[in-house]
Amino acid sequence: MPETLSAYLKSTASWAPTAIRLVLGIIFMAHGAQKLFGAFGGPGMAGTVGFFAGIGIKPALFWAWVVALAEFFGGLGILLGLLTGVASAVIIVNMLVAIALVHGKKGFFAMAGGFEYNLSLIVMALSLILSGPGRLSLDRLIRWPF
Image 1 (cartoon, one colour):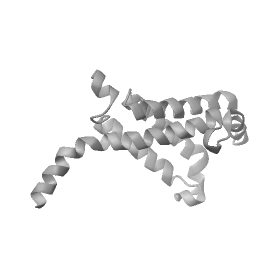
Image 2 (cartoon, one colour; image 1 turned 120 degrees about the vertical axis):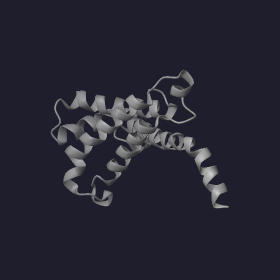
Image 3 (tube, one colour; image 1 turned 60 degrees about the vertical axis):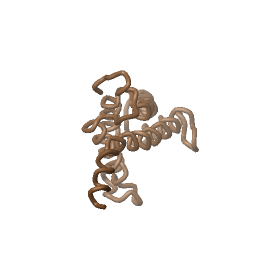
Image 4 (cartoon, rainbow, N blue to C red; image 1 turned 120 degrees about the horizontal axis):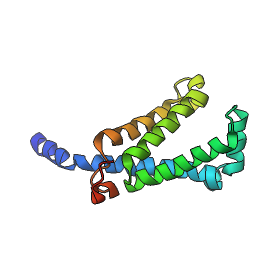
């Protein structure tokens, strides 16, 4: 029986990146939508600019737009499996900056505002860079090596 289970798991392993992509893409599209449109109880662009200005990011308007667009369209790219490696790299940089400017000084645990969650998202994105987008992706359909 263990050989059968092992063979089955090996035959389905190529679907793992697809599962990671779908979850990571939804997470980042939702966060980007919060910033861009005020969706899901988010602050919208005015609130995002205000937050960035409050933590000393200058110019706040420019960086708020960069982050919001990177999250929304990076998440969309990851969700669709389109330019997956590029979108994943954008997400990694976004989370590294979030750790450096906000979460790092609050320690590890997410309950205290720490970087635990950001680190998880970084590893998910890194896994997509290392493994590729998986079976069900536009990159695979188009045969782009992203």
